[in-house]
Image (tube, rainbow, N blue to C red; front, side, top):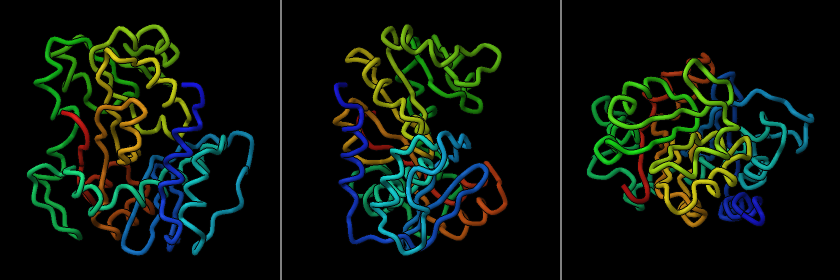
Length: 261
């Protein structure tokens, strides 16, 4: 990719300039950005990097200006930037219009435990990846159980657990894979453009997790599928973040899937 910033600029420019931030919160595990009834979330990356690179975020500021923080090398700022992007792109209405909920009947303001994880990428793609070479960038919970038993699975991780490859092995291993699942936090840490480039035309690429921006723009930059999160319970998201509860976030919304499956 000649200009890796092009992906970020396209996402930022797509945000409606009339939307403003009504509330934001930077928690230990997750962060949130709200604009009226809409909520975007992202995983909080705690590395501060070079210090503050953008003006301090404030309620009432332009949502597009907060989204621009995604370009910061201070990853706490960039985490808020991703949440701001997701506030705009991951709304119930936009995802519904893209067919991102499939046949699941969803009503804003509610969650259904049986339906909310139905479009989890690691479950939805199980039949398709069986017997294939599969790489997962980011160590997701239970990934070995979900995909390891049915595929030739490798996991690449910045902080490797036993059995993982370090993420630097992406340069060597991704071009060999049939299916590549990439955590949405790579938007925050700026590795996504290179990972998409390495995946090439052979591998089918799915960007996964609550930090995933459900913007069709990413499909133009090399992703085949976006499997992210739509927050439908604004109060539930806020409570999760204030309690620093990692997993209850998923009870405050639905997984969604846009693109080829």
